[in-house]
Length: 344
Image 1 (tube, rainbow, N blue to C red):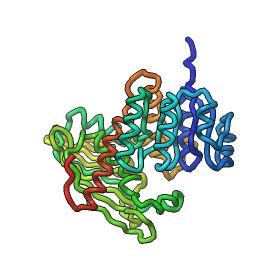
Image 2 (tube, one colour):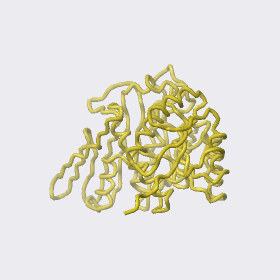
Image 3 (tube, helix red, strand yellow):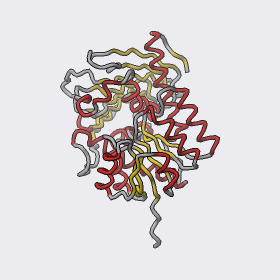
Image 4 (cartoon, one colour):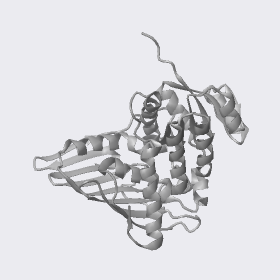
């Protein structure tokens, strides 16, 4: 049997998440990083040595011009996403970009339009929906066991000291809705469909940070207009069941209820009783124990993106798809600022 040729990719960025993204690519297989860029060359050299990456650059344009690439993985701050994505698309190189896609919705639209016009694939590395417990919950929901969902609550609220290992988050003028909202609002879409409207309230609990660190979003979603409440935040207080970075979900349906609770337990309650199943993520030696649920989800996300790049099947988190999530994020900001329902 012939061995499938690995796709060659370049990495832009050598910060906190690049280490885990590169490890996940190695785990997923099917692709090899042949070049890495970072504006601080020493950081790129450090990761290149760790992962056996042959070429190091401190100029992104030179990397894209010099290397023969099948795609580029962009793992930089959001302000640089448009520049690097367009730089790749202009050269006909498929681009994967971290979330949030762009600093504004209009810029995100321009990025997606460039991909569409140039016919160059563009993807967002949105891994939250790829967590094993959330994938399992989706299967139960799709099975119809609890009937038609009419109300749901998605909660990702934690006392985890996120600003200690990612201090740049404290400097963001807009924080929780772009950082965590990009994830959990995407999960809401993944589970229930598109939103009809958005109503949001936000707050800043940590006085020392610039942006908001708590938000609550209410949306009627999907054909059945399921009322979905999404709660997110790093308020710094501690709840009994705070198990960062677990997302808790409760769905009420016409025939029963579905719950994803602490320690990865999924419970389905119908007229026949309650069925419980624990759905822990796989464990990887390279994952940070504090983030292992999230880090494990990078692997199936990368597998899906790779299949999309190869043309084997449509990837889930294309730029086109994630534009709908990005729209929710900025609609939520608009709603909170105006204290009004925003129709979509």
